[in-house]
Image 1 (spheres, rainbow, N blue to C red):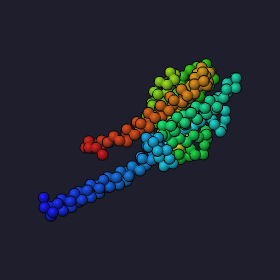
Image 2: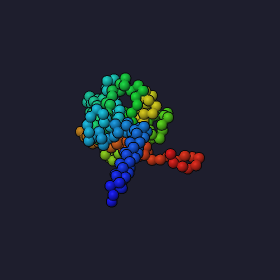
Image 3: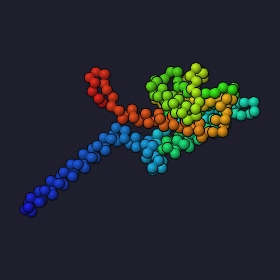
Image 4: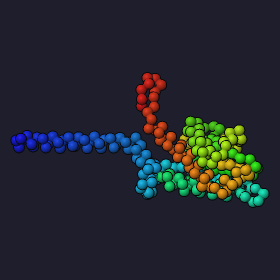
Length: 246
């Protein structure tokens, strides 16, 4: 091959490499323009692999029911709901952080609730001291994101029941749950739920003696929800007019 042809081949290869690099740079720029930067920052995988202030993972807010406000339910022997809630909420926080999730652990009327934007909000409570058993999960009675709220409730209901063996008591859900104050304080686009983890009476052995088991069921429910959120975000939507994908 002549020297002239070799030079032309080298020049062609250089231009090809430059075109590839420019195309790659354009794709990276488009990725970040469409929210890729925030997706990287909120990646659970990156948050686990590269612990830092930058890779924070998805943010979840956990309310330790009654903390900083009152004792909640108090049983005859002095067992206080607020302390049971805090023990579980603290373990939930640690377990989620180990999974690359950024967690805000909040008091009942924490000022940070006002206008809070998060991937999910969950308030952890226990039920009264009566000798009954079962758990309850509910979301806001009025919400602009009913599908997201219901998805969070469904994940918590399924995973918590699997972890604890407790029965879901839908008929025992009260307005104190569906009209829970925190739902009205956080941003409208923050999915929220409240869980009554069991009865301080009939489920005391589980709530007091096995807080890790209780916390693991809650964590599994939250991770289920985050995974479903991510899956939906990656799924193309179909327009109602012509059936094409966005």
